[in-house]
Length: 115
Image (tube, rainbow, N blue to C red):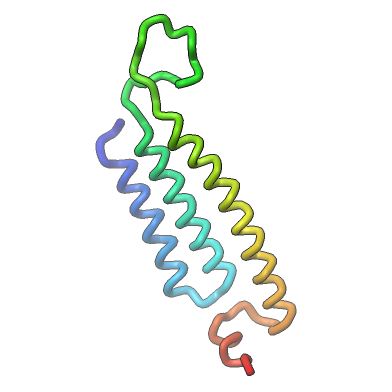
């Protein structure tokens, strides 16, 4: 592994997503920020399960016992990807309904039109 570089990338992606959620006013950009947060969580799981010089856990013909990469974070990441896809689809469908109803994607306009 290349030191702390993967953790730095996870942190950068996480803070980009957090910035988009907190400071953007467009609903599509907020949805992109939520997707970035999900991607950073998935990348963190993969980075934590990595073993330097490890082999694939499914490879049974290895002969001698070697260090293997942890399969649990990989399974959790696959599950998180499916959940993230469903969350993104639901979020984007709600954004489409809000656009049809209010005619704008700006959060400030939607709050002002409430009533």
